Image (tube, rainbow, N blue to C red; front, side):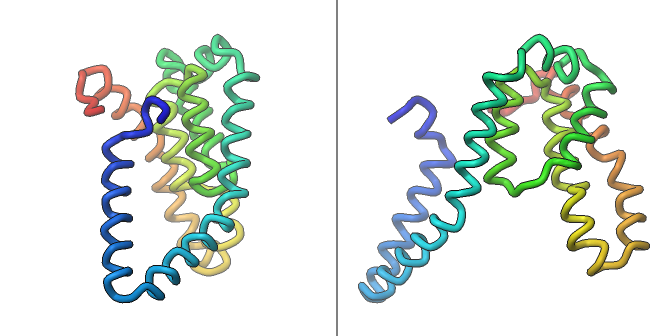
Length: 173
C-alpha cells in the first residue's frame, strides 16, 4: 500500500464497511449481494467525477508555478489571497469528488491554509451554479440574496481564523 493510505479515517470506514457486510450477510446472502450491487452502481455513478477531479488536480500541480500560487494565495497573501480564494471557490463548479482533489493540489502548489479554508468555505456557502440553478428558483431570490449577504463574509473570517489557529499551533493533524 502507498504511504498515507492507512489513515485513521480509512481504517474506520473499512471497519464500518466490513461490519455492515457481515450484518448484511447474516440477514441473508441475497441482502449482501444487493448491497454490493448498489455499491457497484454508486461506483459507476461517482467514478467519472472522481477521474475528472483527479486529472484536474494533477494538472494544477504541474501547470501552476509554486511561486505564482504563493504570491497570489500563499500564507503571506493576506486579504488578497483570501478574496481570490473566495471568488474561485464560489465560481468553481462540481461536487466534492471534483473539489477535494483540486483543493489538495492547490495546497501542494503552495496555497496557504487561510486561502484554502476560504476556497472550501466559499465553494460550500456561495456555489454560484447551485444558487442559480437550485436555490434561487426553489427558495426565492429574497431569501437567497439575504443569505448571500451574510455568507459573503464567512469565507474571509474562516480563512483568517484558520490561519491564526494554525500559526498558534492548534492544528490537530
